[in-house]
Image (cartoon, rainbow, N blue to C red; front, side):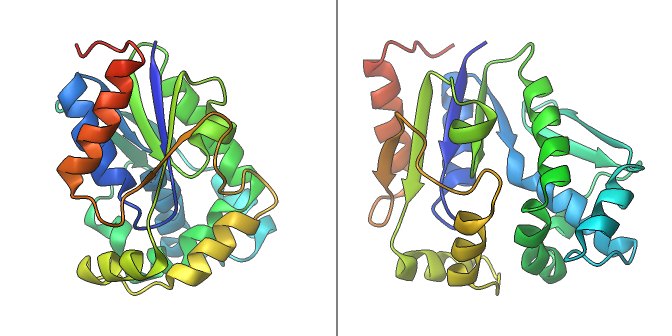
Length: 214
């Protein structure tokens, strides 16, 4: 199976680019962030303090966590019989997901699910540590970035109020699988590119590397 890893900080364009690229080349699409958000949402729903690693670890041990692909070839997550969607963008989730994601037990749980998803599918998977930690041997790695000012504007346009600076600090300084440019990754600055422009650039790089769209 072929894995295309797309990493980068918040509001760098990962999700939109990865989803559109996957459709263009006939791959399945995996949003790893939605899985961390789903766990965060369930913790908050249960009244668990996201900043208490012991309570979080105890709670996730009993969570029924499943994932798969829908008819459009996009990943979904089911948690305790719920399939959250719009709930994943709630402000509470948005403000707590980096804290939850930094807990090793949570990362181990999600990484195992992510690796299981690619057993039978070619995928474009996006996140913050896909090329560096989840699939360090992925043949195609990209790191999307943009200026903080541009990313703040994009975040605001999405109606999200979390702090880009705080998210960057939390994601890049966590002890386990911090946000970083994976070895061998191609860095793409999306600051002044359209969505189609970024997709086209990555598509051409993949084509040059010998990947043939399905």
